[in-house]
Image 1 (cartoon, rainbow, N blue to C red):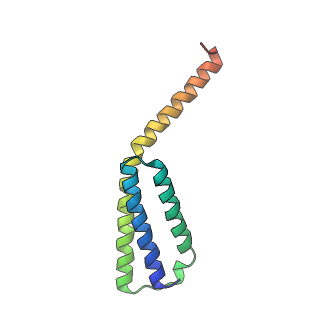
Image 2 (image 1 turned 30 degrees about the vertical axis):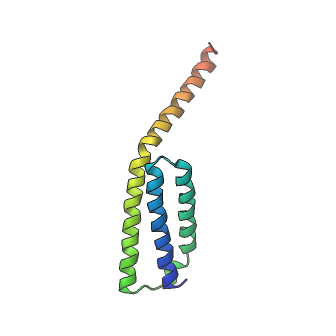
Image 3 (image 1 turned 135 degrees about the horizontal axis):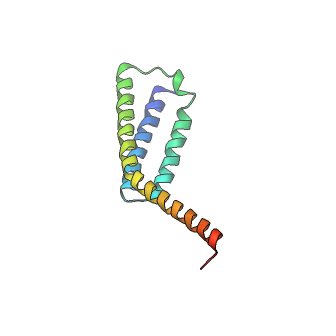
Length: 108
């Protein structure tokens, strides 16, 4: 992998995480999942090959900026998805309770 390929992969991941924020903002959970898979593909591309690439100081700064952007996007995504996840968990727990009650006391 070349320096340019590494930075291109990080740029692609940063663009994807930005799109993930937009998807989470409008509650497009399916779109968020697709984008998450695309980020995972970029990570897989970098894994194992990036460590052999030596970046100069400017390139390291560029990479660091992209990582910071992705971390900020990740925080925003978590802030947007946590309420939805809590609601989903509550719904699942209520459904499980209903099933246990129905099993214990029979359907009404």
